[in-house]
Length: 388
Ligand SMILES: Cc1cc2nc3c(=O)[nH]c(=O)nc-3n(C[C@H](O)[C@H](O)[C@H](O)COP(=O)(O)OP(=O)(O)OC[C@H]3O[C@@H](n4cnc5c(N)ncnc54)[C@H](O)[C@@H]3O)c2cc1C
Image (spheres, rainbow, N blue to C red):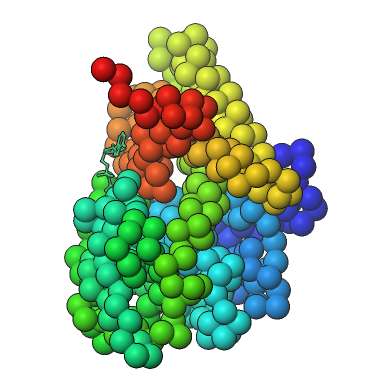
């Protein structure tokens, strides 16, 4: 991007090399076996990637949202699943603690999360509350110097393997009575339940967090009681921008593989790249990728500059995520088509990219929910009016 600083470019080249050396050699096996690249997290810690936007005084790299999006694109181009786990750790857990926790909480949790000794995650979704996140049922009741939590979180990235979770629970009866708690593996009454087997993002463990009379010290509550909705929504914006970065990485790799294949594969005595229908798929994919790249990094840059209203920032984030996610799935499907039979096999990575890309249209707000958010902003009350 034209506005990348020298620091951004250096980061881009460091992460590109890291992805090539540490992620690429294991990506196929981990996808096949539904494993987890634990070693990569220690390496990310050494490289300063786990606290990419955390201020330096807390051990972070002190960079910005553009930098975080660069890390997602570069890693996502090689191994989108490990990148999803990286996003849950860095953006959903570490960044939230860095932004909202007390100095004591930061000193307690950030060093080990930023070094990679601990793996982090975030628990918002529940079996009956996905898109309707405020409909969550997990309840926290204060008893002296601790809270008792009961409920279940589901689809939690790094649930099966994580050590620390940034979790939301109801502390009152209204939809907005939501508080945040830092949960540690080993707390009494806390366990990780079922691990899900998935079509894509298979090297990013997804599972349940179960609270059964779980005792959480009041000192682990983040922010005031019942005051978490704003923090939760604000973080969804940066989650959407950075997750769009993973979509960019997936799409870029698909375009590269399909372009190379179109030059090499011959049918009817000519490279398939000489056929206009192949050119159409390739060029549309390349152009859509560039458009989404511009939109996503502009959203990140505007987040960093901070001159937009929170509503405007949310709209940019929602639009960047909505378009990039659909673009990545379509570009991956087009790459499969261009590679023909080979595209459908595990001889080439495009089928994996397609399976991984689909998650981008579901996590962090489905396409439908993002359209709803954008429509409400555009149409106001008319967006919700009954058509009959
Ligand atoms: C691999 C993976 C990792 C995840 N990681 C995390 C995580 O780390 N932490 C976390 O908290 N959550 C996580 N999630 C949960 C994710 O955010 C939810 O899956 C997502 O928000 C959708 O919720 P849902 O699955 O319950 O679908 P539902 O909300 O049940 O939606 C089902 C369908 O109905 C549509 N729909 C719902 N409401 C409307 C509406 N008002 N108008 C139109 N259509 C609507 C949806 O778009 C969708 O197509 C993860 C999910 C997956 C699959």
